[in-house]
Picture 1 (cartoon, rainbow, N blue to C red):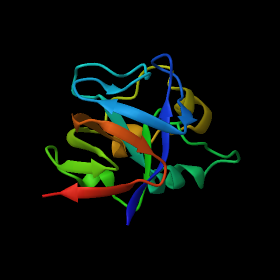
Picture 2 (spheres, rainbow, N blue to C red; picture 1 turned 90 degrees about the vertical axis):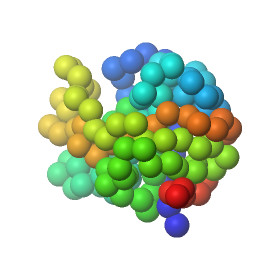
Picture 3 (spheres, rainbow, N blue to C red; picture 1 turned 90 degrees about the horizontal axis):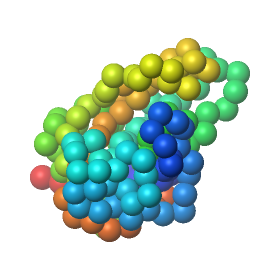
Picture 4 (cartoon, rainbow, N blue to C red; picture 1 turned 120 degrees about the horizontal axis):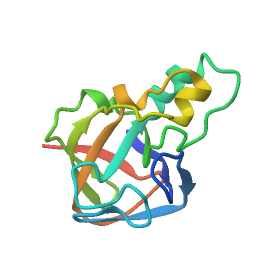
Length: 144
């Protein structure tokens, strides 16, 4: 079963995110209280913990949830293989995949520390179709 491992937000763009207990995802907005929220195609970012583990193996320090600036850290789903347009059920929320990967911004904190950032290759972005609350432990399903 695929599930949410952590939910994270940041107050400013370009910085690592901090885990929170739960988040409210709003239609045409994204996560309430997150710097990247807004009425655009990259409302919420998702990254698989399996992707983080690939980078972790080469490091001598422990990565934390939100270090790659992901909003939702997942487990048990290969996110980057989902086609654009795929609909996901995440707890009460429904979202649609709008982008796979992204260009890493200049001065990326994790790239500077770790020498690599997996988000540009394996992170995905969704827009919110049905709003609600998401928290760690919520099940993630791919909808038909």
